[in-house]
Image 1 (cartoon, helix red, strand yellow):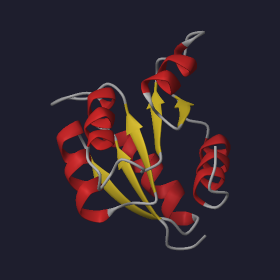
Image 2: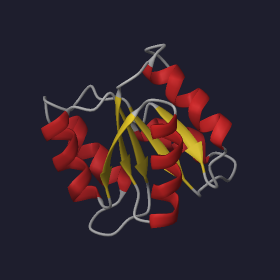
Image 3: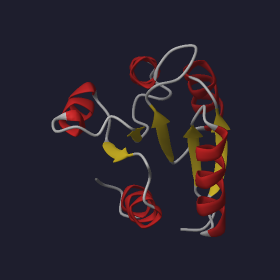
Image 4: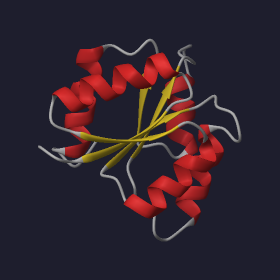
Length: 126
């Protein structure tokens, strides 16, 4: 598992630090973007193994960023997980219907984060 690149898209520095610290400590390399535009650019340039996409961000949101990634042949097949505080009943299903490969709710549980990342990166499926 060591060395896989995870693109973390998060506009909150505290949350970004949590992702960076946890993922780096377990051997993943993190790429970082703070808005939808940066996310699309970074994903296109670096072809990460997984994208953790915040939903509510400046520039354009995670859903629009996902749509742009899916519309580009270079990034259409990237695995992208929605990471959001929108955790009401039905939200997970909504984001999966939007085309996300998976879903993590905030506040992020470190054990759930790692098991989910491992499942998508190492296991190859959701």
